[in-house]
Length: 448
Image (cartoon, rainbow, N blue to C red; front, side):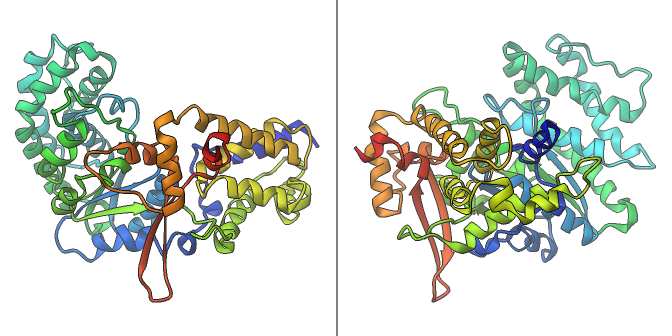
């Protein structure tokens, strides 16, 4: 087997790259009937007014993949969708405040919406121009507005977001100045949105803004009795977050949903939807064949994407013999899937690691076991001594307590040591349950 082919196979399992549309697998059956078009999409298409929804789930479970599917569907329903995944140029996950998100939304909305008449941008540029003098000493480079077009002036917002990222020493001073004027910025942005919605190309029905990757924000608290940045963003400034005059979807960290703030979120936002894990086992530990079938389908579809110049159909040929030509046996493949716990990104990472230990196909049992052992070591280094009894309790009860005084379970959810699943029982009642990650259960300390 050529090294070129191994390289191609390795890259179709990139854990941080959403699969192409052809490789998408709908896991609704194994996610307790959860479907992004119904959970988030219909709220938008059936509401006469603007909506603001929160969306969360474990990191790497497939949230972005589902949002990209939602974007394509909304576009097909004749909506204008602005989607952006907040990156290092937009926010610092280790230190994010509400104004950082507002500035990022401003930048991406203006970049995405090109109007024939630039007058709607004037409110934003006027806002920026009035504050350029007070900000110039704090920014990496001075704001330059003279002689620029209106759109070029608005691009100067990127200097503010760049400095927020690159200069921690000046960060709070800039935020303070922006926060003092945030209401007028929101007003100017809404003036732009109002005109934009009337001028959307192809007579689009409405404007939708989807802000991804906010679930990466790390919770920080300046003092024990002080509100955290989560409270500052999603509780204190919820009216500003939902103040943009368009349909909104924000991703949020899963720990804020599973906390004492859950009721406030439900009161402050239209919906809070959680993308569950793919259920590979039932509560009684029996294998869920529907879930396992979905994971095998994910692997097949990615393998089918593999192609070589002199062998354009090599991927399809390999996919048809997945249990012999790609993996040494179906038992080895199933074991790898089950040890992922239904976590999509982890499955892709372990497949790549198994390929690292493979000179030639098929991937051996030893390579798969090595990939599993290395993944287990990551969890071994994550868990503190006092958390082991909590994990054993969750494994036994399949539930987690939601105590304000004990946030250890939230931390274990955030680190994916505990995973959430859901299903509908024979009476069509929704059942939510939790379990310890299979890799954690396989550690010596868990059973000792």
